[in-house]
Length: 310
Image 1 (cartoon, rainbow, N blue to C red):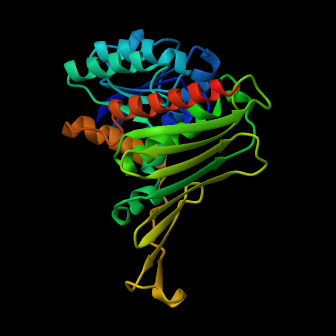
Image 2: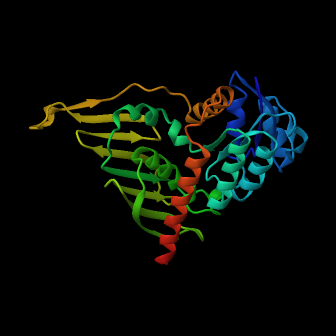
Image 3: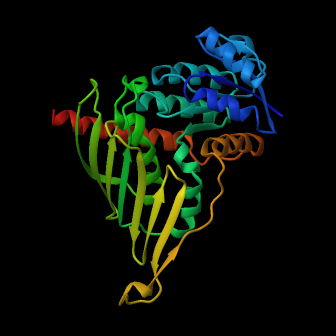
């Protein structure tokens, strides 16, 4: 059993605590939150201890899930890593690339797992799609949802689009050659809607849309490549693969449609199980600190482009 704590039990952190209390090889020793009433409420629901700060259990735990506001990621991540604690940090990894690099360096020096919470990588539809994806030429991503005042302190690029930036970078496996980005502030002081086009060195083009002013939730990615295209519905964990059955497509009968059966496991649970597995087996995580840094760096470049058009 791996002794672990959840730091920050707000909207997402409470689910980390809930799932860790259910995972067999996890021993949830405590939840930490500056809101003592909230910490006690969540602790009671998962039968563990509540703390206002991490210090009382720093020497007891071996791992931590950090789910606090982004400005606190570096400070808490550094404290845990320097004390020999493996970390799963929610996205974005840090506020800037410099902070991210420092955390990566500490994790490497101390031989610790540093995983970043880009949970879509653990979406069953995304996991099942991997074997069908070989040479993406064009990718279209849409992530739209209703306004949530809880995240009005951050824009859609680092709150929503960053999930897709991480996934796209993992699929295309090439450097970004150039990018164009446009957006608007509608309900907050940050960008509420953004459209971006990425051109990669290998020729792949990616169009991304992110919005938090949509009346409906819509989260899909479509990947086009020679011989096939893959459609993933993140929200419904649905995967469809359309591919040629013959070298020349004369009609629709020359196309086969695959609908693989998928596990209904929560992506967040799969992410946490992977984190624990990496610690216990000494493996590099699927979403490493380096991956988190790269997605953050690209997100910040997109924000720079947006500011040019203000």
